[in-house]
Every structure is written in structure tokens, then in C-alpha cells.
Length: 495
Image (cartoon, rainbow, N blue to C red; front, side, top):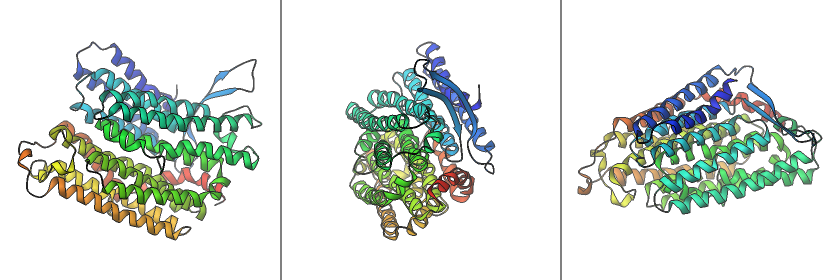
């Protein structure tokens, strides 16, 4: 059993262990989940820090024949895992946020605690599998696996219109998955090799019209998950009504599944189509950036405001990809890859801070607050750091990613880079407005009883701040790893 298999299925083992625990001991459930996710984080750290950046390529590979039908020899599915410079940081991010999710949930979840943590662990395995799978069938399997726990986590432990939000998330994602499944089947049955191996399929020759059709089928699934305009409307509902820890995971890693799919599959298997339709993608990216920011400004709810900001920020990922593809430069692609990681930590911190305020005040309406920094100085400070990171302040993680995206896209689409920079100005407006209205001004007497974050709440807050500052000050810790994974992709694009 290889390291990746242990890393992948340790959460499943943890979920089984939780099933065997006696009912009623919620504290033990939380401790066991924290230990399991903590060990998984250590394993992910080992993979990240021992990955040979100089050698590059796929490492830690594990491959076994999985599904074989003797009477149908052309159908072959392999249990094929591996990581490279593109997926390794995302595996680390998934394990990191899953570990923190346990502490974010510690005081917030007090009903059906065992079931909640079992689903949390199963969700972690589903997301990790997407980032590790190198067999297209296995990739699709893990892509679908994460739907079930996410649907239940939103529908059972969410707030507001939680069943509506969960169902909308499920319908949108399943619709996108249906398009991807058709694309996968077309790739498989029109290839000369009986395999779902992504790299083998990438080297097949397909007729251009067929390949274009497959490209748009698979692109649809990733566009829904990213999400980009106009396929984004499930996101604010899911974010707004999900438990805080689930919002952190949804923004931190589930959205990155769509971005990762664009890098791993579209850029690798469909480089010609990506070049041809890059102007369309950059147009959608700019609309997502500007539209997402404008709608964000109008939100009266703190959590929905942060949720809509993700539409704008994930538009930057698409902008960096399209600019890198057209300009054949590493800068834009590396910026887009880095944005996946930095957005996960910054938006995760915003959601975690909003969650602490909501847990204490039982409301997220911006107009209800005022002056609570006097009562919650730690949360106010953490929120300021997250907000400044979100709008791209130097020395914080968001600055480096956005700068690389603008530099890379400007070479090919100067107009898009300029409009994208305008999106940063809009971000400054909605972040600073919310921050000033909630934390400063006269203290609303209604909140005189508020207390600051508990010690358990401070664990994820401080951990995320540390990572945001580390990446902002020393981005090379990630950019060099991402570059090793992006070099083969850039070579396929002709750069």
C-alpha cells in the first residue's frame, strides 16, 4: 500500500472508526476526527516537501488493474494515482483545510455530531481523489463521490433555505457531470487504446470537430464547478446556507476541482481548442470578475458577500489560464495556479471569521452590526488581514497571485488585464465597506455582551493567517512547485 493510498483512504478509515464509537460522546468524536485529519495533514506535508521539484513529472505513482471484463477486453479501468507539481499543493491545501474544519465545527455543530464528522471525512477523501487520480474513470468517480456528503452536510446542518441550497448545488453539479461523462465516453470509445489513462488519451489523434465537441462537454462541467458566469448561481446559496466549516471547504477546495480540471485535462488533452477558444474564455473571465464584484457590493449578508466574491476571484484563475495559453507564458499560468491556493486560504479565513461572529451574534446582516471591534479585537484583526489579502495587498498571498495573472494576461489581452485590475478596486470597496460597517463606528448596544473568539476558534484563524503571510512573503515555496507541474502543459501548448 503506497503513501497516496494511505493518504487518500485514511479519512474513510476514520469514518468507520467513528461508526464504532459509542453514541453520546461528542467530544471523543471531535478528538478522533482531529487526530485522523491531523495525521492526514502530516502525510500530505510529507508528499509536498519530499516531491522532487527538479525531476518534475508524476511522482508517488501507484497503479493496479482494477476493472477487467474478460468478454470485453477493450474496457479497462486502472486504480492509477500520482501527483505532480500542479496537484501536490492542492492535496496539501485539502488536508490543511479539512483539519481546520474540525476546529471550526467544534463549537458550531452540536446536533448529530458523529454523522456530521463522518460525512466531513468522506468529503475529504472525495476531493483528495480528484487531485490524485490519473485514470479518467477514477477521476470521474471521485468527482461524483464528493456530491453525496456535501449535499447532506448543507441540507442537514445548514441554515436558512438549506434544502433549497443543497438541492440546487446537487442539480447544477450533476448536470455538469453528465456533460463530462459524455465527453469521457467520447474520448474513450474514439481512441485506439483501451484505457482511461489521461496521458494516453492526451496523445490520441481525434478528428477536430469531434475533439471540439468533447472539449465543450468537459469544459461545461469545470465551468459549473469553478464557477463562472452565467453558471454561478448555485454558489451563493450553497455558501450562504452551509455550515461555516463546509463553506470553508467549498470555497477552499471544491471550487478548485473545476480549476484543476482545466489545467489537468483541458490544457493537456485539448491544447488546440484552448488556444482557439481562449478569447471566449477571457471574455467570460472578465464578465465573471466585474459582474461578481458588482453583485458582491450589493449583498446585505456577510456570508453571501464573501460567497459572491468567490465568483469574481475565480474569474482571475480563468483570466490567467486564457492569457497564459494565448501568450504561451508561464507567468499567467503560474499566477492562475497560485490563485487556486491563495483563494482557498484567504476566503477560508473570511468564512471562518464570519462564522465566529455569527456563532456569537446569531446574525450575519451587515446592517445589524456596528463597532464590534471593541468586543472582538482578535476577530477584527484577523478579518482585516483576510480582507486585505483578498484585495491583493503586498506581503499577503493574494498580491502575488493577482500580480502574476495581470502580468501574464496583459501580454495577450491588455484590455482584459486592465478590466481585471478594476475588479480589484471594486473588491476594495466591498471589503472595506463591510469591515467598517461591522467592526467600527459607535458600538451597537445590542452587542455589548459579545465576547471574542474562543481558544478553539483561534486555531484555524491563526493557522490561516500564518499561511497567508508566509505565501505573501515567500511565494517561491509554491511557485517553484507549480512551475514544475506546468512545464509539461506549456510544452503541449507549444511554449
